[in-house]
Image (tube, rainbow, N blue to C red; front, side):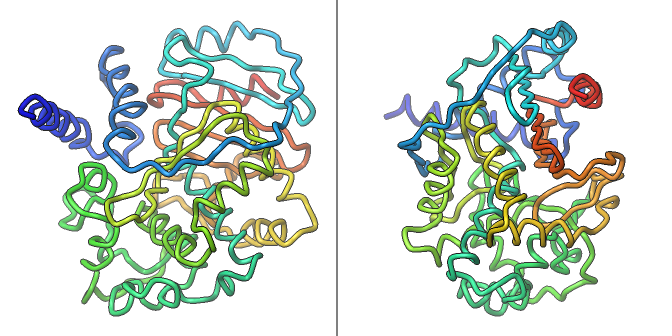
Length: 368
């Protein structure tokens, strides 16, 4: 008993040390040694999932086979050896032609998504709308989450929430020295729950509805979907896994009140991330309800320059890089996690990392 309590105390001290530098910043590991970065990797892969409730998504009953014609790329190998880059997969629209990983992970390692999970949560909202569980993007979230009544977000529409423009600059401001809560690190340290954060917004007046990227809004929307879909959000994710033909078990985390923590904490094997991306790419280009939802998002783009996304547009928890001329969409995560889908030819570039200590632009050049 004493031993277990000591372990818990040491664990929380370590988490506090790690997240004190603000987990939201992509550069929070800047200047850290190789061993320190690898310690962070272990915490993300093992300790954080083991210290929270997991929602399990079973493998698909019908595995999607991925065609491969892989050749080792020496430049990518050097990038992996010299940086925190963990995995690179490139699918050219027909087959995988690059598939390389670091020795720091195994083929069956379930890798964190960080904010790439926001994009998947948006897909789940679209699925809930298409199946009649939520009326539409213009509907107010208070109709689905009773606790929202009387809070800052009571009259927020789903469209505002997934575009990070809910008018909460006065409450959820990421500027250094802000007196307001920093959501991500306090959630992971269990200092409060997503519901606590929502309730603490009572009495705060709305600001202008400008782009203000932060993490609570994804968990808020995910909670609404979880409340409305028969079988909950777990059922929605299972349906996606079945359609995508995933190979292995996946999971996401939730807090002590049962609210999904999908601002960051979705886990899957690297090949299953590709299968999910392939399914989203297929749906995006399909003449279906979910395809219409995704293309509608593409038309909702707003500039994200003030929120750390310089040179990018944002819509529906997806990113759109203005410097890339092809029609595309991106799922991005803290520390330089990325899924890039070329909507013109169906190609997909996917990479994971511990930290952003490598030039991701070189990866885009290598696969052109």
